[in-house]
Image 1: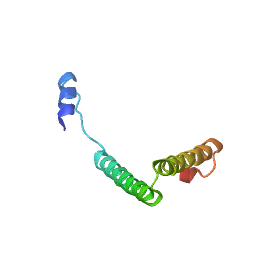
Image 2 (image 1 turned 30 degrees about the horizontal axis):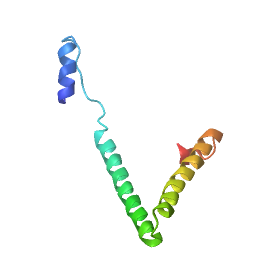
Image 3 (image 1 turned 90 degrees about the vertical axis):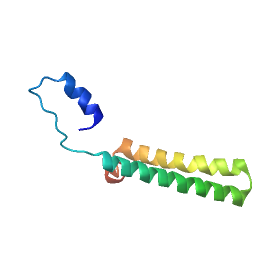
Image 4 (image 1 turned 180 degrees about the horizontal axis):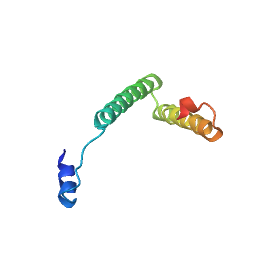
Length: 88
């Protein structure tokens, strides 16, 4: 058990035993690492866009518009109940 569990077991009665049945921390850590890599790739793509366009505003507009359009599309899918395997 981890350090946090020791504090919980000190409060519980001795008849209660605490066991970890399913530890999902490795999956969550891997997912966070994937998100970090995706963010790094997107920042490098945005910097490449800035180098190509040589304008801050011309870089910010697509950098904001593309994620917002994706969020809107998936939000509409969830609201209308279509493509549930993709959106959920």
